[in-house]
Image 1 (cartoon, rainbow, N blue to C red):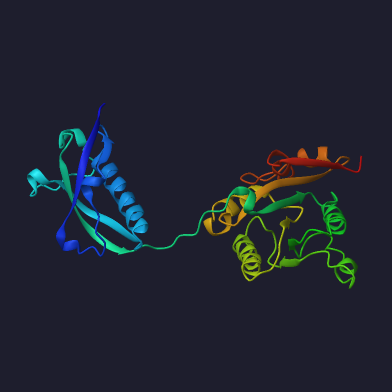
Image 2 (cartoon, rainbow, N blue to C red; image 1 turned 180 degrees about the vertical axis):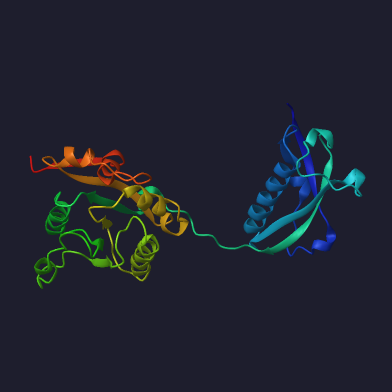
Length: 277
């Protein structure tokens, strides 16, 4: 389908504070595209051109028409080929307002990585977490943990004056992370983000779940919240597995309508660490 070349005409009542030369900026668009497509192209052009002219503005088009028939507003879903020929002009009327400055989206590499550390009771995930804190002292790591975990992060490690093993600790005290405290998990992560925005340095976040936690709702909660994913990226789900007892946990019978947490932890992990071989 051939391209159309169209000229925009801005309705005078819009009282634009900048002067745009429509003839110097013809619109090239496929005839098979819709009126909505032309509206969006015009709005994007308006924003870019007013920014170039030094007065950033936004245009929300309410009505678009062919100037040859100014009494007929076009249906946004109609194809352009039914209303325009190349060289025609289209009129627009809408709301003009100061452009809202939007932050440049961060690349995945710029976002703070979040690791979910899961595993059944006694699998060794808290021991692994303590080891990471000791061995990665050059990194500032924030921890989100459950107070009801089988072993808390070793208090002696956390209280050592000569080394700050964890940059920040947020304790979830309402029970299992997979059900009632998903809201608290979001709030805990937002609390960490607030510290970062105030100048705090956090290189990574680790979420330690209880042994009975199904990681799927936690992942879903994280990924479904744009306020979190703007600044955080889910780096990995790591499952610690007790090699001796894991087969029995995978064969556990569960009530109808419930899931086998051990199976979920294995099935949805990026990395599995076998322990107690």
